[in-house]
Length: 275
Image (cartoon, rainbow, N blue to C red; front, side, top):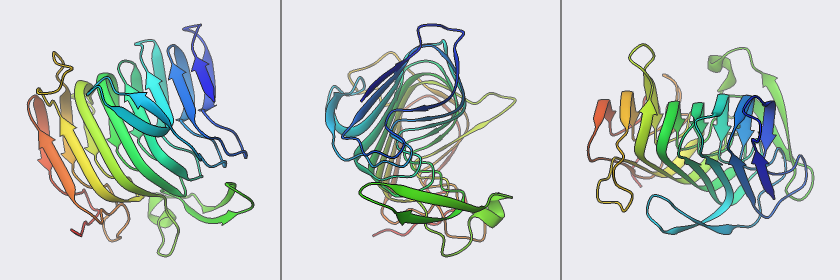
């Protein structure tokens, strides 16, 4: 599936999905060049699984990533006012969910899914643009049940959306990312008035190994340098008093240059255990 959004800079869309509503899809490529997305962008589909992959060349390293979903934001005329997800709303992603931001304006960027299922790997490359918050993993701040109603089709019932504290009750299934890889070597994150947070892990969704690399000047794409007005975390966000958003493998943070507010090797409130 190939979706291109943006001939008219004044265009406004509420939701954009690279994949289908119920139907599974082998792979998607979503190219956003202009316009305003008022709600959410999903690299994959709504309830349909991403079952295949394609080779995507990285601007950052020149290597090829085997990705099930690929989202490219490459214009200052792009405004994502809520969330951008590399994966699906509530369905599994078999290979990598890949987000590549080279310009534009994004509020919250998630490498993985919104609420459900497993994302095998996430990759987030940022070389430009203005972003408020980044999560290498998935969101998952909902209380819900997940049931399969056919091949690759998942139905989710939201039970309580009153507050984050209520939405992460024990025993609730949450999205999982096996590996996250966040690479930042350009762009501006947050402002002095409104600071940002960058997490290698997820918000409430758990992750295995996490990698966060900022301003690696040894990479082929030089001449960029990110400015982070806020905090960076090697783990996830979570919430005090629960174990959501944890890293079950090894978190790794590499900062090579640039202006960074505060660096944490672990998570915010989310724990991690070295396996």
